[in-house]
Image (cartoon, rainbow, N blue to C red; front, side):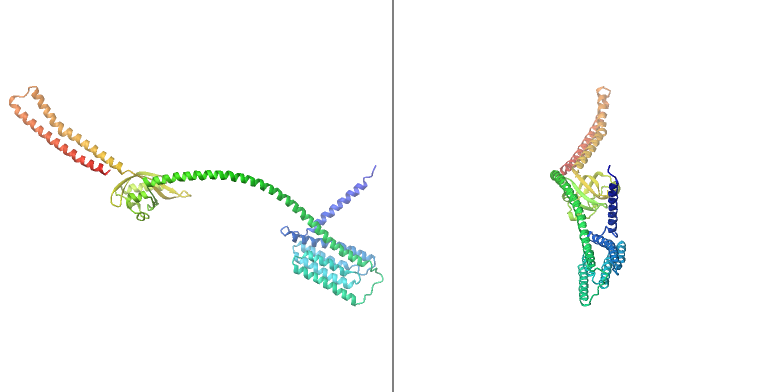
Amino acid sequence: MKSPLPKLVTARFSDSLLSLKRLWSKGLKIGYDPSQSGLEKSRVMMLNGIAFVTTFFVFIYSIVYYFIGYRYYYGPLYIVPIAAAVLFLNHTKRYLYSRFLYFLGSFLIITYWCYEGRGNGNEYTLVGLATTSTLIFSQRSTVYLNNLLCATLFLVYKHYDAVLPFEPDPTINYDVVPWIIVVNTVGVISFQMAFFRDLVHHYDKKMLIKYREQSILLERQKVVEEELKTSNDKLHDVMEKLEMMVSQKTKELQTYIEAINVNIFSSVSDLNGYFLHVNEQVIKTSEYTQEELIGNHYNLLASGRHANSFFTERRKELLEGRTWRGEVEHKTKSGNLLWFDCVVIPIRDNNQTIQSFLTLGLPITERKRHEKISEETHKVLETITFRTSHNIRGPLARVKGLAELVKRDLIQVDEFKLIAEKMAICSDELNTSTSDLVKFVLDHQEFINDNSSKS
């Protein structure tokens, strides 16, 4: 039976690696600001990673230097305060200070390393510093200046090392130390390359996800476009039908308007009764020009027949929002009197506030004349009936009574003369009444004929 110990060790090792990975990811995100651009966030994470890696390796190098007997074994530890300050500045989101502190601090410490530890190859760490400045600064001028400083220091040190004789420490294996520095420099550069490789891989995944999301959105967009196209086709058909209906209704409305303009008195007035618009029929009927009517009060056409109370009541109903209808007599410019059956309608705006009044009038002058003729004729007939009843029937009744007396032989011979006289009087009365009646009928017949000819 196999022992479970190897599996347990493997599991513990895997858990430790996962914990270190989470710790490493958390450390890289010190000072992480989601509002920054992707490139700026990458620079912050890069600088955090360099601070952690540098701190780790300088402890390793100090231990190695101590065991090989190098008296300057503590020298690499000078970089630790710089790394800690860099992490603190990033944490407080002072990124620019963090970058300059890293470069200037590292530059000064490397300068000291080159002077204090000659023959150890410390000058090659300038390569790592130069490449790092290229990655953490955004301004080209800053990058060029930092690289120029690194190159200048490298050349100055090489000149110094060539001119001033070097006395090696017999307890140090100088063949090993340069290799340590080279490994350090290569390690820093390798870290930078690995970091950017992971960063590119990370953004590549994000780009792939965004590409897939965009592909899905494009597919949805195609579906929506097809639906929109179908809807547009339907809408186009509906619009064509609507245009046909609007055109048809417009023609019908134009026909109605033309019919109104030909046959109906139409005007629009403001709330105070001043004309805003009149149609051709108003101009033609009133005998005024459009310029004489627009801006004038409708009293210009008043005939004087209607009392002020008539117009006051009409205005009250209209201001209450009700439609008014009634017969109105107007007077033309030349003084002719005309009657109209009018409808006055309040016109409202979008807020349902009354803005003006529309008046539509149908000419009824001819009907009013016929009504007047009919009324006069009725009066004439009543007068004829009255006169016939009182002025003709009375004498006829008396003649009939006298005739009955004669018929019954109730009259003495000497009374015939008296009866003849009375009958002559009745005959004169009948003649006078008949003449008056004929004259009355002829007079009113002339009046009726005059009014008929006017209509």
